[in-house]
Length: 95
Image (cartoon, rainbow, N blue to C red; front, side, top):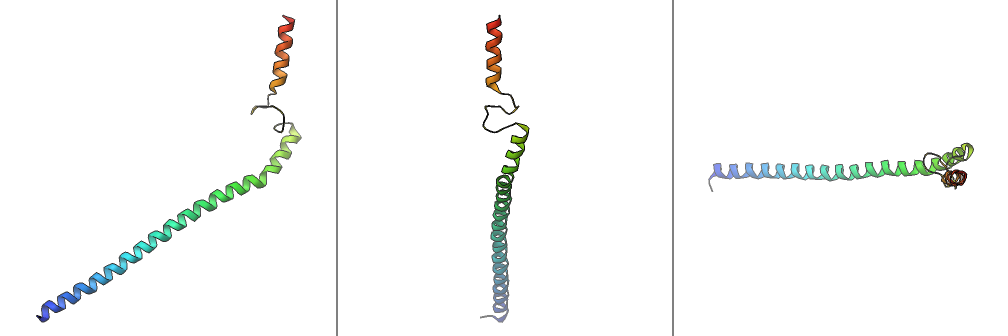
């Protein structure tokens, strides 16, 4: 074979090997970034759930101290619907 052609083929082989290594490294970095992104969101969601779980007793204690929440049939505004119904019945009886 021609020495010039042989040198060019070897140069092309070296460049191809180098490009393959670079592409492999890029793919590995992409996989690592994807795994880290999943771990990041898993930690964020886990911390959120854990903090809600840990804070729940304190919120319940505050609610019982101020008479909101708990086992009563109260809405989000703190209105007791059974009292309202009783007052309506009394009002209708007085009419």
